[in-house]
Length: 260
Image (tube, rainbow, N blue to C red; front, side, top):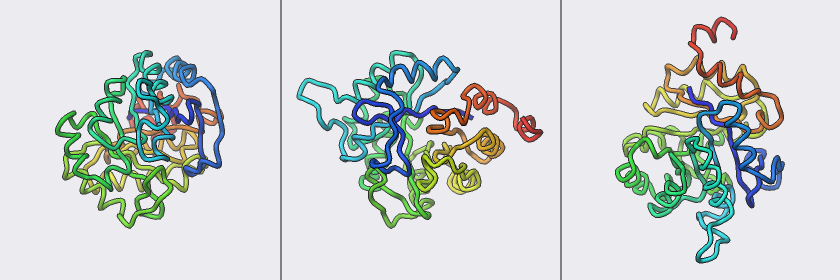
């Protein structure tokens, strides 16, 4: 199981939101590169980077001049120089967007709103770049999919979208329970595992991760298709120690069950 420390970028700063609310922002660092170095030094094997500005406005390159990278994409490019694979999402709406971000150093991109608005784009992206480089972000509130940086609700059920994406060739999905995100209320391991079993997707859990017990619960569900976990606020507050989380994720499930 892969542990993804999260680096959420807003105006070039590393922040965390509560339930995706831009009005409930905590700034943790003015230097995302330093944060990335910290997680790399703690043993991270992947990073999860989010372009919040792009997610909110609905396109990738807001605020950039004709020959200038947007602030958050420039941050992505700097972070990529560390050498860790990066999973990146936020504001991606076209194949050109995807190609640009992959060229800046992302290993895998996350399509969220585009999966609802332009499902053919997802299939085209999988066909062009390969299933290992494309993930679908499924952000849920009360079983329905939320879009546009969690600011709008759709009428699409989570399981229906996940099954459609699997049919279009997607292997990876990131499942976020918006009500839990940034709240340190505990991850919904049961719902995450159920989504993986029902759809055949490799699901990465996100939202609400609060303690090492959450990592243990997800590790025990690994055989159901739970393939990773994104940790945000709990790392920044010190509620979770990254090396300990990585050790649990790398352990055998029998060891986890016995109380590691």
